[in-house]
Length: 308
Image 1: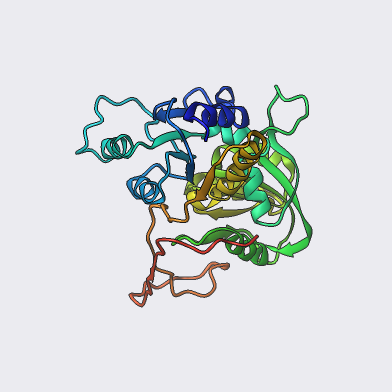
Image 2: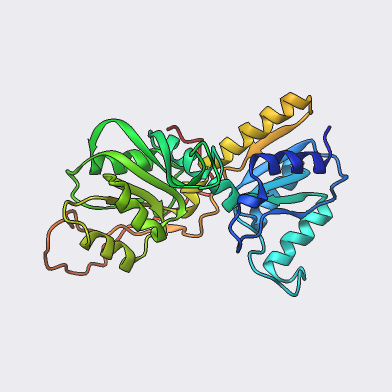
């Protein structure tokens, strides 16, 4: 059975902290490096529900993508929600380790997992890391579909390849536009529009697209490219958990560790309900009349393992 320090070293080799952005907070957040680890839980968010799941699983380590404290704090009091997470971790003897932007930049990393989940053959990074002589690391990924499909069909395939969320998947562009070459970025990606345009792709899949950047990106195009496909932040990063789990299990097998792992299927996306608008066609300029006839769907708390 490995020590926490052994697992930490393995994860640091897979996702070196030096690859993280300067503003990021990655690495070991909580835990005794000398403690033994037999069970590891992977999750996107270090929230209370995930920590409670780790305790039920009997985990000694939780590996999350998002940091618990991205900015400094003056308290870990248990009457704050983050302080309660820290207290629960310590009381249950569970460590917490974060791989955030260092996992975004890794090869394979977060965007590789996203690209594979939605059926793309990866051809390279969207923004290459200049320190990688192989040209494989970097921000985002570019990939290709086996054959061109309509934007409407592609958006449906993205929705089918990712875990279900209340938001679902939105697309901006001509529904009949053919899509083959695609850029992706797990998590918030509207700051990379310049690189996406330079890449000359047919579509861009990311999350957290805001009105003004998305509108300006669409207005700036003369040929309709790239179409924009916007999914939930949490959903675009969840596929990486399976990749990270597999990578750690490979290290475990190499060293002969007795390690059991699990990927959390708790939906920790903050949006919980979707009320679809009653209009069937929003592709043309028409006068829209408000309607109270909206239907709301309950947000799942867990999901079955998605298939790519």
